[in-house]
Image: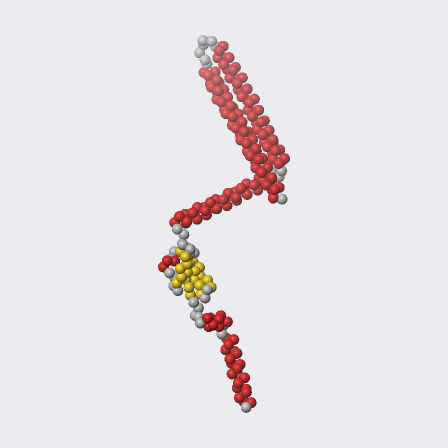
Amino acid sequence: MERMMRYGKFLRSLAVVALLAVPFSAIGQQGKGNIGGVKVFSCEINGRPVFGDTLPKECYGRAWVQKINGVVVYREEAQPTPDESARRRELARQQEEARKEAARQKRQNDALRERYPSLESLDQRRDREIAELDKAIGELRADEERLVARRKSLDDEKKSLEDKPVPADLKRAMNYADEELAQARAAIERKVNERDSLRQRFDADRQHYLEITSSDSRKD
């Protein structure tokens, strides 16, 4: 009798081990009668679902999903049309251009802040550089006045000859004076244009500096 009791306990232990060895998911499937799992492919056409145990032909090229026992195990995105592909490429291009522009603007803002610690430093540098150009223009105008006076003296010398032939050395001196005067006036024009461009650049930098510092203060 004791031997039979020990044998019964042993069989019950084997049954418990066998039960624990079966996955809970399999137990659930057995309860439903679907040990292997039910596979379903589906998509939507004009808001109407289409199902099949294999992928229906109507779903080719569309977004579709595969489910096993109601759980999505795979998802396929719809293939874009040529127009959609073109729109996506254009959108990507615009986003990339916007990113590059934002990076360029940030570099420009950082460089401006580094160049001018304050608005006062910007104004001081502008006044200093313009003053240097004004000084250079003043010196060139003084040279111009000297050359004009030299040219006038040569004209007076020529007039004093009255009807006599103009000597060759006087002609050379007059031609050389004309060349020097033309060069001096061209140099003055370049410096004046440089000063105007400098003013415009500093005005633009000043306006930009005010914009970015105002934006910084709003963020704070």
